[in-house]
Image 1: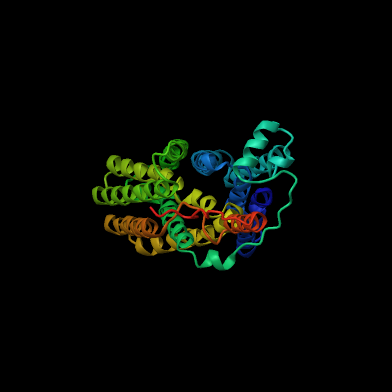
Image 2 (image 1 turned 90 degrees about the vertical axis):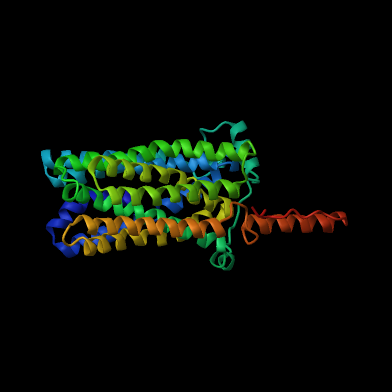
Length: 375
């Protein structure tokens, strides 16, 4: 993020240097920005106790939408008052300030954090099955990862959620102007409303997901499936209704509900990486986020192709496509997702090694716990 902040500051200068230079800067910025989500999961794999994963991850992801809520209306204000270049300068400076704060306050693990209490450190390490002072050399089980149905289920879900997200993020202002006939200066504020709702609901969904697991109401697999698929079904329905009605008040309400329900999906698939293999969570997020970035490229292109004449029927097709992708993602995740530690995971292999050593040492029998419980 520090590099992307600097590149953001340089964007106006790059624009003056020509389209080629501007594209190059934006591509480099995207390369560095692409590691953000995997890094977040890598941090949580060392910090988040299993009973608090949903809440911690949801809080982190809420920042993504809080940034959207703040930046969309402010960008219009800054651009009108000080010119478009000011948008890049202001947010670039904010990013640099954030980078300094992160480097000062955030540590990679509890062992090296001077702010944490000994009791809290002991609790976190114990919940994760780690021992202080023991350095780990991690070798990721690539074959297990790439052949896991549970991994590809969350990849499909991440792709589906991002298709709707990028479609609305990039096209909602244009849709509001061309179809709903809103004035341009108002579209930024209205477009931010759905993401404000989602940012708030992320806190709620994370708390409900963890509480359901801790209280024993649902298994981890059930929480991930119910939250994710329930959200996708709701998004499918409200996207279709909003497109069918296509009137300002009802349509904006339907879009807001659809985007808001995405918060519950994020407490499903987006935390799932930490369930399947905590020590490989960063890699798993890197894989799913790579595929989930494709909609950011494909959706605007397809939408532009479909809405050449900017008619109501053309925009309906855009919404129906998003609804259909939500539904497909829902079905894939429902049948193949899992919220349990996978047999190929590093943690499962370590557990098997300890059990084997125990049998060799005691000469007795050790009951082997089944890694994954079927729903």
